[in-house]
Image 1: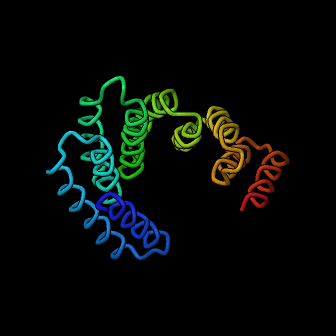
Image 2: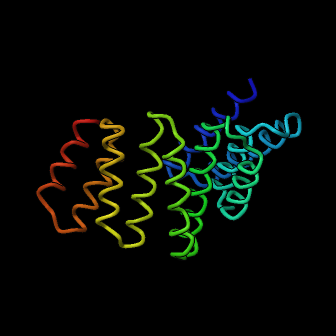
Amino acid sequence: GQRRRILARFAIGDDYFDRRLSGKAIETYRAVLRDVDGAIAAAPGDLELAGYRATALRALGACDQAHAAALEALARATEDDRAARAWLHREAGDALLSWGELVGDHDHVEASLPEFDQAARLAADDGRALPHGLAGHALVRLGRFEEALERYSRAVQENPGAAWAQLGRGRALLRLGRRRPALAAFARVLETV
């Protein structure tokens, strides 16, 4: 029950955020953080809950704390916790990327790339697209459009139906001046939505 409530609150917060209701989104993410902290007090070694904590902190803009929380959880993870480690590496990378975007620091954005690489390496087949896509986003921020295109292409390969991956691929192609393939990628986005 408690984990379902946490996930439901995340979804509500994301919906508020998408509708530009920032105050309501922040209030919801704070409620998520309180729920997660309460659950962690009852189960301190739970890596899934630690990942939720990092996600909630990042959603609230506390990217430095989110990164520290993900690293702390990774330090407790074992080799058997492969899926949890993949998620936590992705969360650590996402915290660094968000942090870099927030303060305009390319070093943080650059530091996110090895985390996304590790997340993709550890993820199950159906979980590799997202870290590749996030790496593509980071590379666009760094102005490395050829590498970004390669990452978005890998994300599309892993999940052909992911509109966000096709969109990222199209944007990278546009930055490289390749209009025709970019338009084809955007057309595929319309097919998937």
